[in-house]
Image 1 (tube, rainbow, N blue to C red):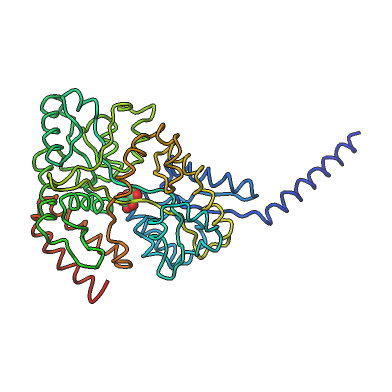
Image 2: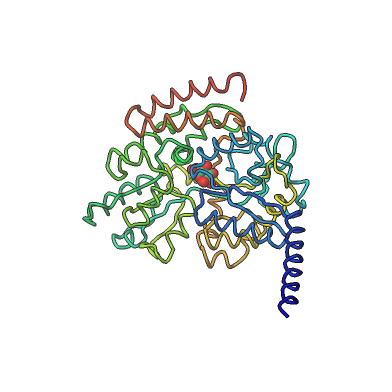
Length: 425
Ligand code: GLC
């Protein structure tokens, strides 16, 4: 009896081993870099794993730096070394011109109908000069103004239409609330790509252009842009924004706002689902509006952001990786990420789904704001974009720190950008 049992066990183990053995021969481990290891990147990995598991594969998350500018440097090193460690990269909307040559053409693996179901402008942004599609849109982004609806209501204010409104409302509520911890307006003032986005919004909202225009003209040195930069400095000088803003990235401003210590916050849509989380002290107290205009003749201007999924040319499993990219960019997957993490979908069909308006009303009510978001000059400056942006954010940082006036910084930038441009972009 014992011997029969033993033989059966050996037989079972041999069978199990051979099954596992066969599987490991074909199974691939796909590594995806889609964030800094926070909940949103875990959701990305878990979702990718659904497709992988159903197809006998497995997905691993490759944790990357949180800030866009840091992630870029990190990815550039990995790609320059032709490393096979990462198969799928989540790339910023401003990177295709910098990184295209390291990615496969996803059109070879993903049906055209799937690609064409995404906003045409983003697909175009992700297509290189040779017509190769280097990234499928994963989610889009636009700068938004978050405000404490409860505090504005209590003191009889509407959401601000202009920057002057925002300043006036901040001062009024700060004076009346009598809470020394309460700040007026928090945003992203650290010297990095996030500051380029915030400052582009101020400048464009005053009608001061987009640093470098679509035809390649360097436009930064103009009176409206200068007025915008000096206005931002005045928020710090007037005390509605703390000096420490010079070191704030997105998560720093969200930390302050979400703990109830700021009236206004400029941030991306992701902050909504966190502010509305069960643990959030400001749950149910938050309003979302377009970025204020620079005066009555200005305009509402949110910077265009967003992330794409790209497959490395050095991947050992490009086909499985591309299929995962396809799975993560279906309407169903984008709806799940929109509802759970307020990622803005990149597909018109998601905006038509009533579930989106029910979960995150601003996603549908501000659709025009998203569609008209102002792009950074990454297409026209292409491979030189990162140099342009880092000069820009450094000079803006100097103005915020009170080291230069808006006029001095704009004149200096014009000179430096002409040098980077050379004869052509
Ligand atoms: C957001 C945007 C991205 C931008 C970054 C700057 O992640 O989606 O496009 O570059 O913020 O911090």
